[in-house]
Amino acid sequence: ALERTFSIIKPDATKRNLTGSVNAVIEKAGLRIVAQKRIQMTRQQAETFYGVHKDRPFFGELVDFMISAPVVVQVLEGENAIAKYREVMGATNPANAAEGTIRKLFANSVGENSVHGSDAPETAAVEIAQFFAGNEIVG
Ligand code: CMP
Image (cartoon, rainbow, N blue to C red):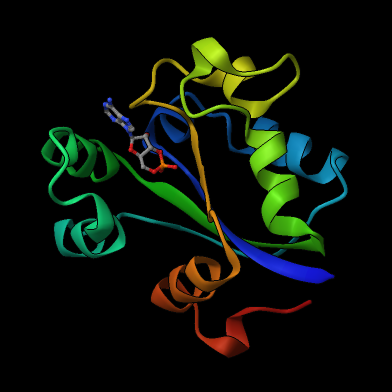
């Protein structure tokens, strides 16, 4: 089915000027960037976004990292976009990521792993709505 997923190009990637390089991998995979903006996340936004992880030992480090520099938030559209983007990103830990994936190409570590992508349709809808108004998404 035609789906939309939510993507974040994380601070480790924006700081190294890799926004265009990440977008090239996304577009080469056939995903369309139908919304995109560069923002400085607030601590509150990051804590809300990662609320599901609030009891994990790495939560504080994760939030600090996500607000350490600008990020690029995006909506990606395509056939099976959610699963396809997870494939294009590669494993959460870049040490386990397949050749040609964004994390294999660019990520530094499990924390500084360059990109986020939604894991299911329900989370994609919630994540998109946290950062984009309907009229900012142009398919
Ligand atoms: P993401 O897909 O954005 O969703 C949760 C994030 O938590 C994940 O990517 C990782 O960047 C981060 N994460 C997972 N495990 C660890 C860990 N052990 N240490 C630091 N960050 C982690």
